[in-house]
Length: 73
Image (cartoon, rainbow, N blue to C red; front, side, top):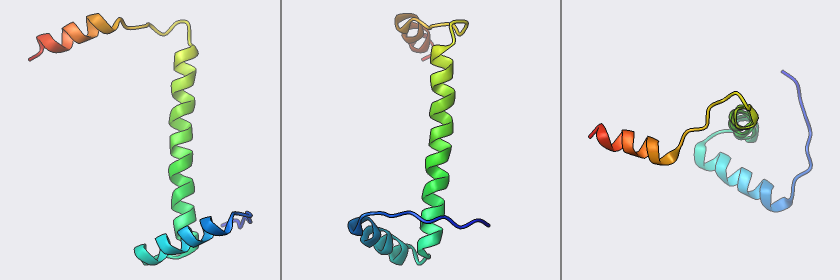
């Protein structure tokens, strides 16, 4: 495993320590999990933006979608 260093504000360290204590985990565990979640969200957003910018991807009409969904009831 690689090690990284980052400078963060004192208030963030206090919040990190409080979260770690509440969870019964180490700072490193909390930071690792936070980074994993952030990077998963980043990947999802990257895919979404690519799809939005894809001119070949069909654009759905909200009124048609709404009507289709209401008919399913």
